[in-house]
Image (tube, rainbow, N blue to C red; front, top):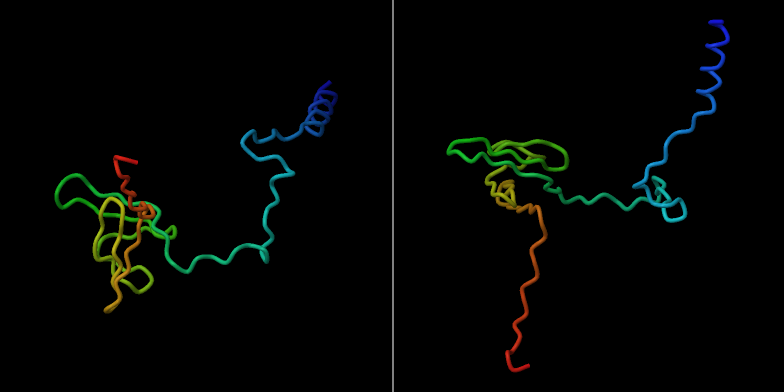
Length: 115
């Protein structure tokens, strides 16, 4: 009897199919890029997150290209010189680079009230 039960369980496992991801686009719209077709990675570091403690003297931590760095530490040879809620300043010698979480918003166009 135990052998029959094991055979039924094994048969059921063979017939089981993986569940489909409801958030995945249809196959006709989704074609994963081949490694050679992939766009070249940006050489500019990408700021992904900034965490600043609310109390004075608290931690300032940023995530740049997946690497966690603190204020004053080094990232690819540059010193993390400053942090705000939306940007990190990297200094390497005389070179200063500002990484932003969000692209700067375009300046608003002024409309004449008579138009």
